[in-house]
Image 1 (cartoon, rainbow, N blue to C red):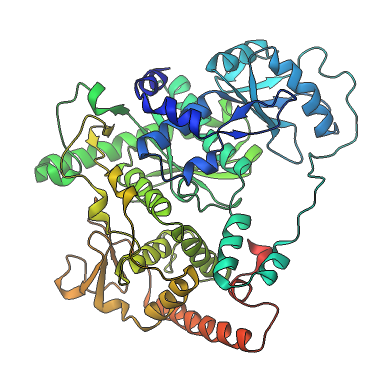
Image 2 (cartoon, rainbow, N blue to C red):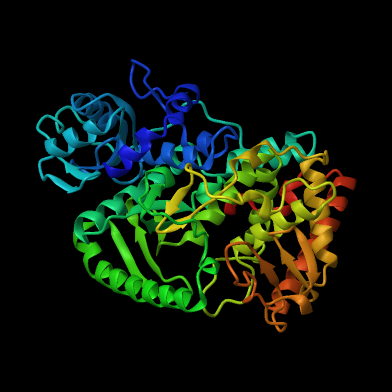
Length: 522
């Protein structure tokens, strides 16, 4: 409720809500709800509007485990569930989140519907936004034949769509639109932080907001993507009692910064250790709970009802702000999303990237994203501005405060217009060529300025094979990537360039995007 009050003060949201809605046929009355995927990719939203819009949608939603025979037909169950939920409030959205279990996600027009439905559940609220439901009457007239909600209008296969495209640029857009996460998948993944926020605030007695960031928030996720979220104390600068303009630890004296880091790490370990022992007792469907003592300590878990892996951090201001900036890049120019999506999927499908661990020395999806964005800054004319342009020089009343740090993200950059008119196909091919020839160990790729400088002038250790620097952090993003992994990447880029030309020349059916990825892995 505290965050809801903050949201109400952001008056611009009201006009945004009226302008950007998508009709979903959840009932015969045809109610409306915001499409979260459209929000993530809409260039008219400031980062504050984007976050509060999606957060408020999640606050009005509820996760239901319907306690009926597992063999019950889901369509029949949904038809029975809708009028029951409608008695609790105006239902905007109601769909199953699993093809094999009776789990549903319901969105109401107000948060009151969530409270009413929670109170109506036979076992009471497990968390504010999660409940097990077995009301009287729900078991009547239900077909005992397992099925799933299906789309009667079968779509033409993605493979055929890609074959029928006129150009590779058209293919890249088709692939992005069809292989990325659906609106329903994005909705449930962005709702999951609300469930975890309930657990930490009600069970662990904290006062955090769970803020999602990463691939899903960029609009580049797939159904296999995990969820990154940070627990943070969030407020608007104009409503905060904090009289400070501190943005990063660099704004503090060295000893104060070191003391903060030490205290933060010890506090994070204590909280996550306690949470890992309790979360399975109060959060049904959670498994694989582990603590990872990384540079940024992480609590990892798997939430079976959504088939989602979750990485939870605490006051991860660098991750949150970098994620918001990357999301803005996707919204600045319509070529960025299909370009990055294909680059990430190509490296994944060809064994060139994966999520890293302590013994992994290859490219990670985040490194690949940084390489893609750096090229779009480096090419002339630039497609996107360097990251330094994404930060404002002064604090403003509209800043979000994460913990005790101002965000200072420049919303005006969304008006950036590139004078580069290359097609997305040309950008992708030229990016492969650029990195095929680059001597990675000789240059620092600085996303702050969009420039490559001699690595001997860098603050990074000269023995690293990949040097990537981003603002807000002194860390080398690519420090764990080995020389052998980079050579494999370059060799694969060269092979793909040749394959593009060969298949185009021989009019091969599997040309363009189909030569770069394996659809079964998408």
